[in-house]
Length: 328
Ligand code: 10G
Ligand code: SF4
Image 1 (cartoon, rainbow, N blue to C red):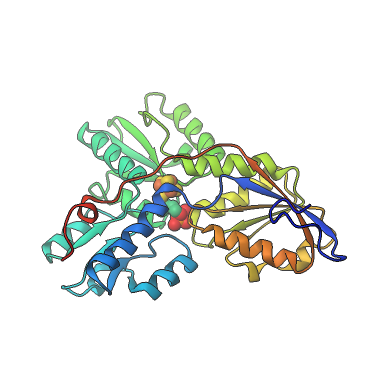
Image 2 (cartoon, rainbow, N blue to C red):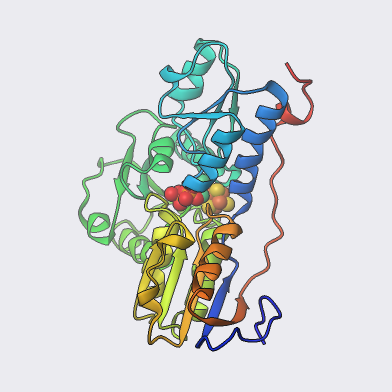
């Protein structure tokens, strides 16, 4: 019996075991960000501009484009009379400041868990601490978090080697904060190196790596050593999805690949394999996981088992302007 469809094995197709990681796919911050764009289009009409991909997924971006969203990278591409939404990854303070100066109507889809890190950064700064931000250079969340504070007050730390050697200003108390989508294990190593070098460093009261990142990595670990191949549905610019590929391989899966769509999966990878694990990054909708299953059904009769390591019930409210304010 095919556990996913309830159907018996199809024809003479060879059977293939599928382990579906749970949780996988959309997190609460992504769900909220997409709803913000959809609701803005509904209230204000197209076009609604979005600064940066609302989340790092082409399928999501293209479906919002069809509804009337226009994606740009910078605010100067937004006309004065159009609403603009800032992406879920967060923006430097200069962005809303410039939007206000231009009297643009803007909605901030920054995930509340990223905004929480922004506030931590401000509080450390207010207490005179120099900040070490653990994260990946150039990633929009890192750009946004660094941009909460004046230039030169945050040092980016990308790995344990930098934690041991990066120059920091002398005589100032230190604190660290992190990007929300990092590898839990790599970050633990980096934090250990920082604590060894700076025993008095201030740490976040509660993990900056978010619940969704933590749960998706734990779910991959739970199935990695039972799978011959791990398929991660996600995009090459999606930090949290890239981490799932790494986590799978480090947790004992012989091979992990990322696919954006079902059609991207090279079926020859599944030949001679008995079990495939499947997960999806926080920005990848479940319909794309279903595409991967449909693709595999071209050659195999699937036996699907879902392995759930955590239940997620968290949701985030939409910005007040979309709940209370009448349409313009
Ligand atoms: O994993 P990253 O940060 O690259 O983003 P994403 O759009 O792929 O997934 C959702 C995560 C965020 C919005 C960053 S907190
Ligand atoms: Fe928010 Fe975490 Fe999702 Fe980022 S990955 S949008 S921090 S819930």
